Amino acid sequence: MTWTRKDLLGLEELSREEIELILSTAESFKEVSTREIKKVPALRGKTVVNLFYEPSTRTRVSFEVAAKRLSADVIHIATETSSVRKGETLIDTGRNIEALKADIIVVRHNCSGAAAMLARHVNLSVVNAGDGWHEHPTQALLDIFTLKEKFGQIEGLQVSIVGDIAHSRVARSNIWGLTKLGAKVLVCAPEILIPPGIEEMGASVTHDIDEALHHADCVNVLRMQFERDTEAAFPQQLEYFKQFGITQERIRKAKRNIMVMHPGPINRGIEISSEVADGANSVILEQVTNGIAVRMSVLYLVASANERVKKNEDTD
Amino acid sequence: MQEKARVLDKEALNRSLMRIAHEILEKNKGTKDLCLIGIRNRGAYLAQRLRDCIEKIDQIKVPVGILDITLYRDDLTLIAAGPVVHKTEIDFDISDKNVVLVDDVLYTGRTVRAALDALIDFGRPKSIQLAVVVDRGHRELPIRADYAGKNIPTAKNETVEVRLEEADGKDEVVIVEKN
Image 1 (cartoon, chains in turn cyan, red):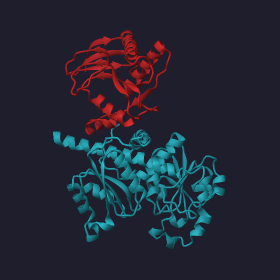
Image 2 (cartoon, chains in turn orange, cyan):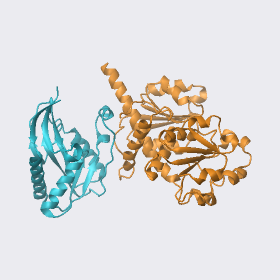
Image 3 (cartoon, helix red, strand yellow):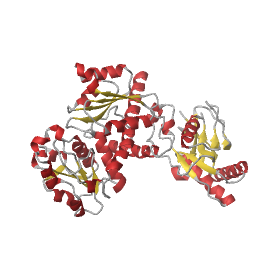
C-alpha cells in the first residue's frame, strides 16, 4: 500500500494497514540509528518546525533527533518566547510558518483538535505531537512498535493501561491503535479518572489493579497529571501509590514476562516504584529509542505524500 | 508491456555469474578483504549467488551485505510512488575492504550513485567495484560496471527484466517493450 495522508493527526482515522505501514517503515529506520554515521539524506532540504504550546522534553527532542537523522533542518518555536504571547492565533502562526516555506509542522497544543484545525488551514504537513486530552499518535505508535518488537505481533495481546485515563491522550491513541491491530485493552484507574464512553472505544474497565495485571502481556503505566488538576481529584499521592502503584510485589504476581511501559516522565513512588521502573520487565528506555525510528517513519511518510500531492497539482 | 526477446536463460545466467565470480577473484587476487553488497531487491539475491560461486571456486565464504538505497534517492516523489523502505543489513565493517556492489541492471547510473553515497556512510572501503547482470546503456552519470554479465543495447521504451527464482519463481533475462 502507499501512504497518502499529508498529515498525521491521530490513530482513530487510520486503517490497520496504514498503522502497519508506519510500523514496518520504522523497522527499517531503526537500523539508521545504529550506524556510525546516524544520518540518511531522505529529507535533505526540508524544514521541520516544532511548534510547542506545552512544555515537553522527550517528544520535542525525539522529533528533533528524528528530523535531523533524515537530514532535515529543524526549527523550534517555544510559544512562551514567541509572538503567541502577543496574541497571535494558531492559524496565523501556522500561515506564517508556511510563508517561511517550511515543509512540516510538528505541533503540541493544550486544546483537543488543535492539530486537525491547523492542518485544514495550511498546505504543509502537520504532525500531531499531542492535542489536549485527544490524541498523541506517535507515542502510541512507539508503544505499539515496542510491543511488536518483543511479542512479534499485536493480535491477541492483552494490554492494560493504568493511571489517569481521563486526562490521557496517550491512553486514547493507544486504545485506538491497539484495538485496530487486534489487541485487547483493559484500562484501570479510580472511578473518577475513567472518562465516560471509554467502552465504546473498545476498552474494558476495571478498578482493581491486581485484575489489571493478572492476565496482561503488557502494562502501560501513565503518569499522574497533577498539572492538569488531578490534584483535586486525587489529593493523596501516597494513597494512589498504595492502591494503584506498580510495585515489584504486584509484578511478581503477574505473568513472568509482563512488559512494563511508561511514556515518561516517570514519577517514582507515585505511579511506579523505582524497583519496577529500573527492573528487568521495564522497557521504558527502549521506548525512547524506538520513538526516534517511529517519528522518522512518520516524518518521511507525510513528507513524501505531500510531495506527491504538489507534483500532481503541477501536472493537472 | 510486451515481451520482446529472451536474452539469457537459466543456464546462461548461471554461466555469466560463474564467469563474473572468476573475474572478481582474478582482479582482487583472491578473497582477501573481499566482500559483496547487493542492492535491494534483486541485487541482494545476486550477491548471495555470487558468494556461492566464489565458494565453489575458492572454498571460502566471503561476507555478504544488503543495501537499501531508497533513502538516498535524489527524488523524494519517486520514492513516494514506490514501495516501502526496507532494512539495510551490513553486519561487518567495510573499511579497508574491497567492496563489490551487485545489482541486476545498470541503466542511468542513478541507483549506483545512491548506493555509493550510502556505502560511504558506512565506512571507507579500499575500493568499490560494480558487478551487474545486464548493462543496458543510456547512462546519465559517469559510472561504469567492472563486471557485466551481458551488454544489451536497448531503446528507451524498452526495459530489461532480470527474473530470479528467489523473487520471480524462475531464472531468465528478458527485454520488455513498453506500449
